[in-house]
Amino acid sequence: MEETGVRDPMPHDHHHDHHHGLDPESGDRRVFVAIAVNFLLTFVQIVAGVISGSLALVADAIHNLSDALSLVIAFAARKIARRPADEKMTFGYGRAEVVAALINYTVLIVIAFYLAVEGINRLLDPPQVQGWLVVVVAAVALVIDAVTALLIFRMSKDSVNMRAAFLHNLMDALGSVAVIIGGTLILLYDWRLVDPIVTLMIAGYILWHTAREIGPVIRILMLASPGSPTVEDAIASMEECPDVVEIHHLHLWQMGEHEISLEAHVVLAPGAAAAPVKAALKTLLADRFGIRHSVLEMESAADRCVDAKPVGHA
Image 1 (cartoon, one colour):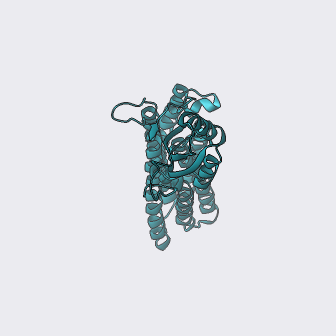
Image 2 (cartoon, rainbow, N blue to C red):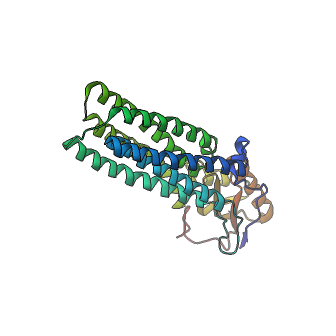
Image 3 (cartoon, rainbow, N blue to C red):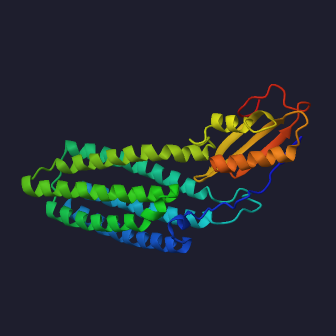
């Protein structure tokens, strides 16, 4: 029985900013600027919300504070993820960004439920709101949220960590639009119920988006198989390889957002040489599925596993 852990023929690229011509240091600077402007905006919104009596504006400020904190977490995770593998973390630190995304999405869910409860309370007892101040500050918030979203948009394409931070800011920008509409209606018609209604809309929108994005993050942390390739596709393709009789004990999982790993037991045909078959399988996995980290245990008919399952252990 032969177990191999041959190094990948092609190096992994964990610095995904490079995919869009943005080096990690430049990306870090963008995130730092976004953090600074979001903290400043949060302070202005909270003061204005307290003065005006607008829960929707305070809600937007709290959400914006979560944006700033999410960017802090994302910034730290980016730094940690670039550390090389060592004796304590033999797989490296790349999953720091996945953990950061989970934290940010969880915070969004908590905030959304808090806003929903406060919005319901305000529906029962609508307060007096100074619409003009709400509109002015929300308009400023919209500009800053849009700038922040643009700063990190390119990085969000290839990083679940930055995508979580981007969604924070995108939803905050949309929330600011809703607040502006609500403040305008208060100015025109003195319709105070619009403030808690807008708050509930923001909360619902946050929950909807978060529910869509948090699932893939949890799947990565749970070592789930990727959507593509499927386990069935991987086994079928490997068993098509000459001199391969059977594939069993297969594990297929995502080490990170862009890195798929595979390990499996390979039963060889009688008289087949292990090394050429192993090389052919690794080439097949890399070319067809982009799997460049595979561990294959070669077995003969004499020492093959008994009653082996195609997936997992017996």
